[in-house]
Image 1 (tube, rainbow, N blue to C red):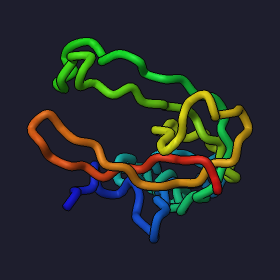
Image 2: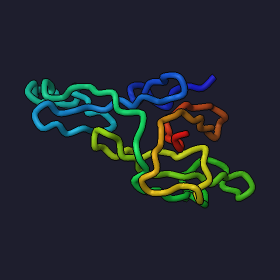
Image 3: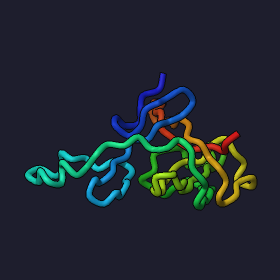
Length: 142
């Protein structure tokens, strides 16, 4: 069983991850991760201006790159080329106009195209001590 990587970032809905964002009532600006009103202690106008928002689970690939080598220290995973698995990271543009930095999963990087439709999903990360953490990602739409 995996543990959520952090509380309040997303929820699981079937095979999709629903990301929690926020919108400023005064400007319409959408942010991810969500702004937390409690961080604006003593500023009730700002607190009241922030509304929670569940973001779209579909978007388009804005840009991406591959991580082909283990990150430098203090990375705690196994840095050996036999164990480290390259991965794809990118930005996905959602209908709300926000760019989400994310893992791109279940795809060969050579098959990705800028503007390609993607859908949210979940993926599991393993820590150096063997803990499984559930996080969000995006994959190509079917």
